[in-house]
Image (cartoon, rainbow, N blue to C red; front, side):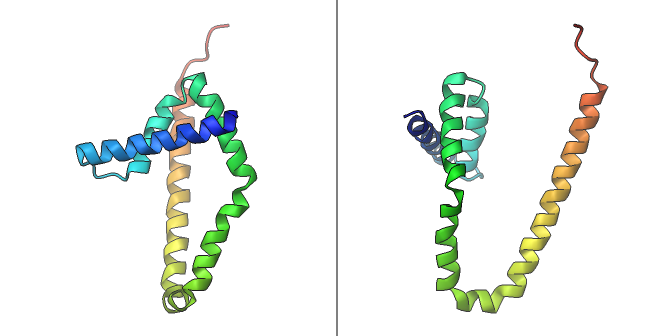
Amino acid sequence: MTALRGLALLLLFQAAGEGLTLAFKLPLPGPVVGLVLLLVGLRWRWIREPTQAAADVLLAHLSLLFVPVGVGVITHLDLVSRYGPQLLAVIVLSTWIGMAVTALVLRALLRHGSNQAPPNA
């Protein structure tokens, strides 16, 4: 039951993000705005615990989420064969960029964390 509440909360945050994007004509996708709202909302236990239960359920069945992608690739095999090298280049390049940005952010956070004084015990 907790996981069901978590899924409902996830959908609620996505809908709120979509609503805010449409209402304020934001240049961001609604689900991204919803994720930012969820990030803020995770401070409260009544949001965090059901969301964690929903995430556990989704991660346990993650392999099922790849079935539609596989069917789509098989369905559009002509497009994959036509644009395959470009797709591969974009996937590899975007992965490298994502890894580099993650490494730079981690290095900055670790450097920032080491400059802080330890709490007095």
